[in-house]
Length: 503
Ligand code: GLN
Image 1 (spheres, protein in one colour):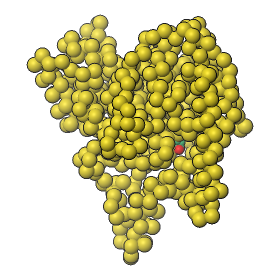
Image 2 (cartoon, protein in one colour):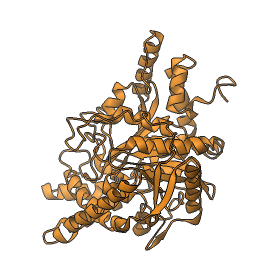
Image 3 (cartoon, protein in one colour):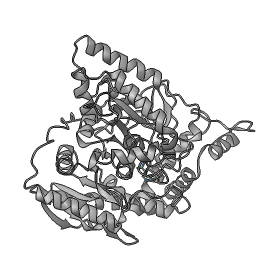
Image 4 (cartoon, helix red, strand yellow):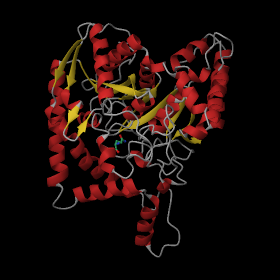
């Protein structure tokens, strides 16, 4: 039911389509925001994408945008566009929880750089989204606020850890979103929810004001309805930042630069380790969808070849040394003194800290802190963290060798489609194995993007594109070419409508 017959439901629009309607005054920023909030009111009780809504602030920002349009001023590509923000990004004056009890009551005194840049771009932040506690998980089931649900099947997980951002985009509860990705947390939920998710090169986007999980891996990136929107969001958030010394000092390119360019002659490598490894096989239906996608790319003139990245098989084991080690150090600061929650009625400073951490952290976070503390302990550092760092170099070199030969690598994003809620909560190893296709990319620090490539068992499958460090423009070019040739991205609005509005 549109405003009039030619007008689609506003909440289902991409950002670039909404922008066209805003500049031609066919719609106002107010109408767009109202449509998004109406959608949230209609479905979020079931989908549970959001942990906090920011209506007042959103109203004020959209009113400013409408005033600008009324005054005849030009607006930027994301001005007035409703966005969902993962609750791991600091927002000045607005609670930021990481979906952990330990951050209960924490109100950041400053904005993350990405949040400030979005504000400067006139983006309308609608609310903050659900996630696995401290971004540790693949299903949002580790959230202190309860899980989000997959808009394609409410009995299934949306993926994680940025599950709330992905379900928000999948269920049309925002036009664009930000997530973070340490081992797959943008791309895997994007794949599960049938949307686009991009992890930029490590260092491309400032992490100032991002609550740290594993500092040598964490990256911020877009979750959107299509590839063009991902590029537009990258234009708003990418580039150097004096507040983050790990940020690449060169100016970011125009990420839309190569969208629409022909991919004839583009060399695509398909690393076999992403389909089958000891202990994990990609589901046949997922592999089939990926192979069909490769044929589409070939039909567009790309040269597709199988290749091998032999050290990729070590990615998961070394991730579970490096990420917990860094997390155990980063999470030492939650001791009841400076941030958020403090256990009541404790006797002395030691019991205050231990009781705070005991009551404040969930199971998975405690497991990671223990693993990481062990890996860093005296005598074990060389055997574990150092060794893992050396193996990590071998993985990066595998990618560098591959990119001497290929422009792009293509793989599945995850070995399965979205799994049922509860299916893996009692088996951490099964949960971890879900990230087998995404973690190697974080290990190498290269950029990658997941785009929808069809269905298995009626649920969306993600196709992962990977390019060399800093080559996001080629990444987006390849993903865009595929998307335009197939149009999977927005095929199933009716199905999502049926699921999320039911009950
Ligand atoms: N699922 C992985 C983990 O649990 C990755 C999470 C992430 O990328 N933040 O650590």
